[in-house]
Image (tube, one colour):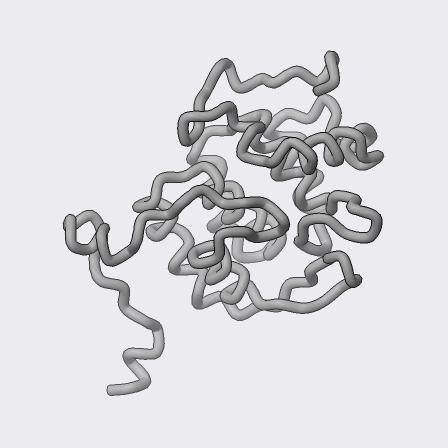
Amino acid sequence: MERNNVNVNDGVSIHGRHPLHLVEKIIRERIQSSLYWKEKCYGLSAATLMDRAFELEYIGGMYGNQQPTEFLCLVLKLLQLTPEKEIIIELIKQEDLKYVRALGAFYLRLTGKSKEIYQYLEPLLNDGRKLRVRGGDGYSLTYMDSFIDDLLHKPRVCDIILPRLMSRYVLEQNDELEPRESALEDDLD
């Protein structure tokens, strides 16, 4: 890690590790050596990072010659800053800025506890807006609900290995979550 771009998380541990180590070393090094990281992410605070988040035009992991997307750079910067959970919840509640919402959802999935992940991400399964995805083979389209479903069920999203998520069924059996009600249930009646 660059000497002048030190971690500012005051020793916070997430899932028993240093927050930056939630991103694999090779990807972390590629992010930190990218032009976007050096020019746009250096010296950002939680408040100024939001300005960069408002500029996002797509989500994704690595593309082209293994270059990180701006989305991935901002995820790493969020991990470096470890903002208050309330800030992340506000990002997720953003209805006007879909890429800001996706950034908040991804960060919560990386850092949150299983119960709060289900609690805050499942309502986004009703968000059917299109998202541009930049990947190794160019751009493609997905939908917010599909992206959220991937966050809840896939082990790797945007080239990042996600921490294990406790089964929703187990949380329901332990009375930590209410059974999920689909938005389609009203249509079936």
